[in-house]
Image (cartoon, rainbow, N blue to C red; front, side, top):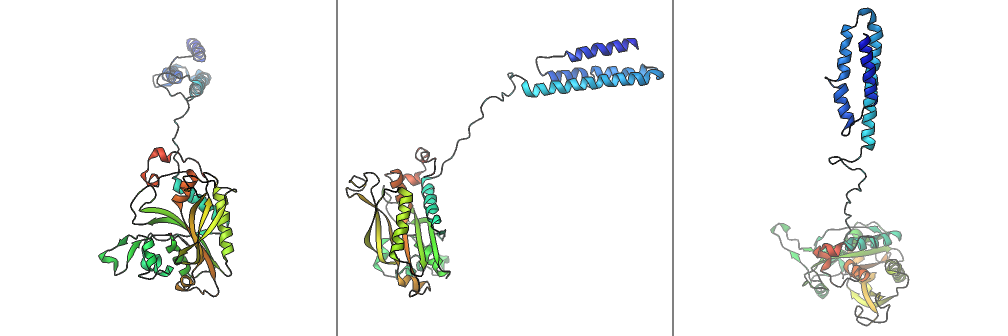
Length: 346
Ligand code: DAH
């Protein structure tokens, strides 16, 4: 029994001083706490202890076991926290792998900016179909069949045996959404309609067979041309800066009367005259006007009671001016070298 006590004391000393170069906790566990470990073999000595001593020795051996287990926990913790990097372990002090950040497409950036400016004026976003019928794309907008203004927009028609006689087409402008909103009959209306449009154009630096527009529509009682001008002036200043000037030129659209086109002072030369503005000092950015009474009536709105303004602009055009992009094709080619340049919001 004396010998057993001495052995326990010696092991305790050994355990307290235990160290190992590699995996000290695991080495310790195998040596002392495993099935063939020292603690187990010491505990097995209990069967040799005479009955009257069993209580006393039981306590001593139990304490020894707890002592070894505590030491194991200690070693485990210091391995977790401060184990220096070895060849096959992970160095937690190294910086992590950088996750490459994506960037929004410039068309989305500009579209979101346009939306947020008009939302501040109380405009809600409305959307409509890209495959449209003749009524919503043309006829309701005061372009009856055979109207020469239909030639202003080269239309992609869709013929399909299942079309049931409807003339389907890819919408040539987002103005179809204003018709759909007016037909809902809920007044007043204050919406902007962003979306993709299609035209049968030869692809070049200045034209594409699809592009994006934002349509605007405000219908209420007593809406005037002054409201239209002020709304668009606010938009331009928010979009391009306070120093930008605007001018309205008389124009023609079948769905508005009177109609106008709006120019802004050239952002490149500030109005002095340069290649971008073709030495005029002005660049055109949108079409607009007071909604034609025929359009209101086509959508079952009383044109004696209500009036409204509408406008439509190309998002690509705004983006080209904003970022000084010279070729429209860049927007649809998905060249990462181009797209990566637009990492922050406008
Ligand atoms: N829909 C016209 C186009 O695609 C743009 C436009 C002009 C829309 C005047 C309007 C407007 O609502 O009033 O060229």
